[in-house]
Length: 232
Image (cartoon, rainbow, N blue to C red; front, side, top):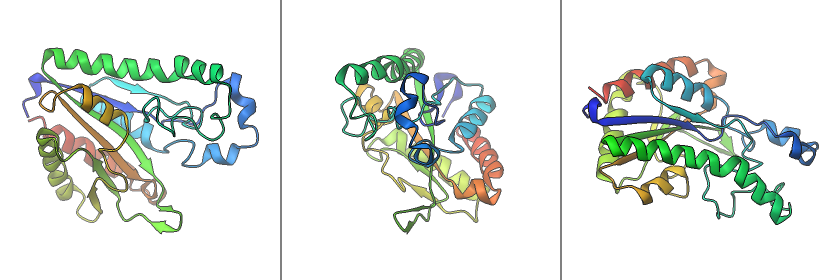
């Protein structure tokens, strides 16, 4: 893929578990929940920053907990608010959307639209997942989530995964695991707005086991090297 006509954008929707002071009282009894995978994606922000720096590309991040509002859900999705914030009055939920959700999504959309006006864009969103959920062990170490029905997106991920397999031969590399990349999410929303030839949206999902095993830094470097290779 020629680099000159491609804009590159990185995002991290679940980069932290901060709760703004106005709503801190709601979470006083939920510290354990905030610190868990339900509150944020450990490692995702570090990965996003490393990729953005290496590729010299824009980065949009949020360090507000997804338990306040989930930036990776559509505004009217049933899970955009957690069980903690869902009970808030309508006016308070609207305030959260206006202060945190809409500015983030609008900023990403502006950068995507700007890149498309000059050519096309590859949008990479960084996430992480727990090794075991509800007693089930997740076998993937690193996965790329995308929509296989969009040919440019599939071709991009095919190339990236092929290079990753060379760099990380001992790790389990997967497609659309442990989640499907074409269900509700920020990339899915952007796909609806932009043609396949203009917009490629990929979510990186990293197993949080890599943070504990000490493999995170090596995997981050491999992701960076192989991503660069897709633009030469």
